[in-house]
Amino acid sequence: MADLSLDGPKIDRAAAERVHYVDPRVRLLASTRWRLATGWSHRSWLGLGKNNPDALIQEARDWLRAAVAAGLLPPPGRADIVTVPAADLRHAVEVFTEAADTCTNPDCASPICRALARLKAALNGDNLRG
Ligand SMILES: [Zn+2]
Picture 1 (cartoon, rainbow, N blue to C red):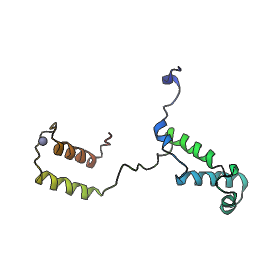
Picture 2: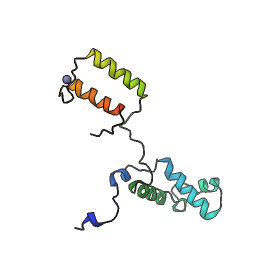
Picture 3: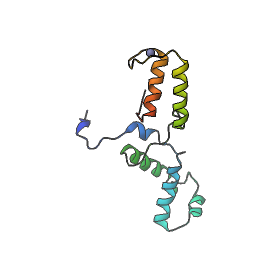
Picture 4: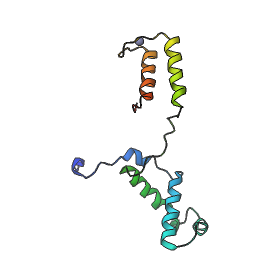
């Protein structure tokens, strides 16, 4: 097996695999590429149909995957992450901290203390995973 550590810049394969045809960037990339090459209109590109190889949909998907893998473009949004206004989350943490049986030990293993520690870390901009 090849030594991947010598194989150039790192690529994020997992992020690339999350890019699918439904990503609106795929069609935008395809139609823009086609319009640059042909000088024709977006309407003309639509007239090709999405399954027409000339519409460059698969090619655009593959290039978008490459751009995401290389870190040039962000990966698509994650369905398992929700966005909450920071003020709302801060308020919830305060309410839970007062109402629940919590302590000040940062290494406490109780479920409520661990959950609150994760929420506080998120408020501090820490990127938590797992
Ligand atoms: Zn605790």
